[in-house]
Image 1 (cartoon, rainbow, N blue to C red):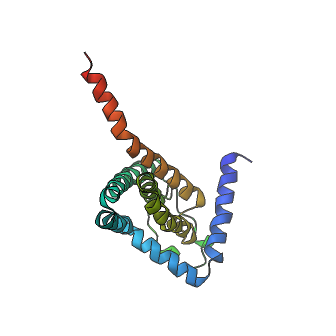
Image 2: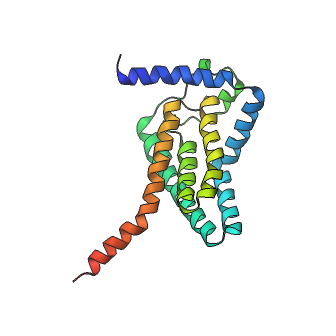
Image 3: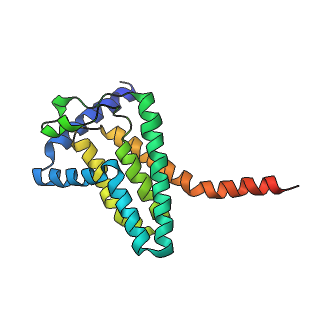
Length: 187
């Protein structure tokens, strides 16, 4: 069995288990958090609270988080989904009606997870306490994407990696630009 075949089989098994073993009350909480994260509402709201209550640190964290979120959305939804074109998990794996409310776009990677992780990781670098608070709903978003049947676990894992890379890229970009500027100024 090839590695890709093994990953696909693990994806199918974990997706089916996640979709069938979450109690209805927990599924409602997962769905509510995902709905809040839809269209990045949750992360924009968190950034607004950081700006309002966090002073300089909050503004810095909010700006970094939103910048990383935008880069992650572009990378995951604008680039990776266009290249991968992976179908969503089959409906027969999902024993509940949330499967009817999923997008038609490619399953790979999870754009919701990429945005959530990018925002959270970028915030955590500037304001660790706020990052820890954001980590809870970010994790819930990833779990919900599998539980709802919108994604396979590997889609969520790939989204998380994209989010981490984008947060790091956003953190390092100002330093890289400064270095380039200094090199150009040298005679």
